[in-house]
Length: 193
View 1 (tube, rainbow, N blue to C red):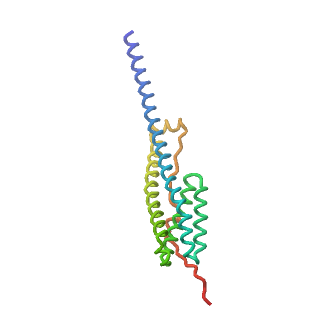
View 2 (view 1 turned 60 degrees about the vertical axis):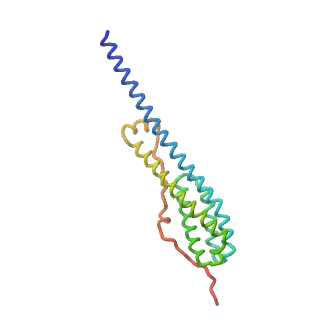
View 3 (view 1 turned 180 degrees about the horizontal axis):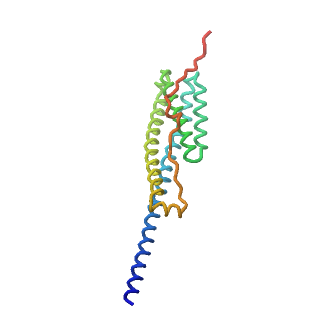
C-alpha cells in the first residue's frame, strides 16, 4: 500500500513537472513572439513618420531641383510602394530602395546651394536622417528578437513544443543587395547648344 502511494506520488510529481516545464517553454515562446510583434510595430511607427516627411521634402526640393524631376518621382513612387508593402521581406526590400533614393537625393542636393541654405530643407533633412538612424536601431532589435525566437524553436526541447504549436521561423528584416551598393549620383542638367 505504501509502495503504491509512493509510486503514484512519483508518477504524479513527474507528470506535474513535465506539464510545468511545457508551460514554461510555451510562455517563453509566446513572450518572444510578442516581442517580435512589438519590435515590428515600433519600426512601423518610425516608417510612418518617415513616410509623412517625404512629401514635404519632395515639395521643398522640387522648387530648387528643376533638373532632378526623375529623382523626385522615383522617391514618391518608392514611398507609395513602401506604404503598400505587406510582410517583413517585401517591406524591407521597399524600405531599402527608399533609403537609397533618399541618400541619393541628399547627395544631389549638395549641388544646389540655395536648397542647402533653405531652412525647411535642412529641418526635413535632419528629421529624415534622424528617423533613418532610429529605424536602423529598431531593425537591429527586431532582428535580434527574431534570431532568438528562431533559435529557440529549433533547439531541443523547445523544438517539440514549437512543433506541437505549429510555430514556424520568422523572417528577419534584411537589407537588399541594392542597399549595399554605393549611391549612384547622376545630374540631369540640360544639354547646352
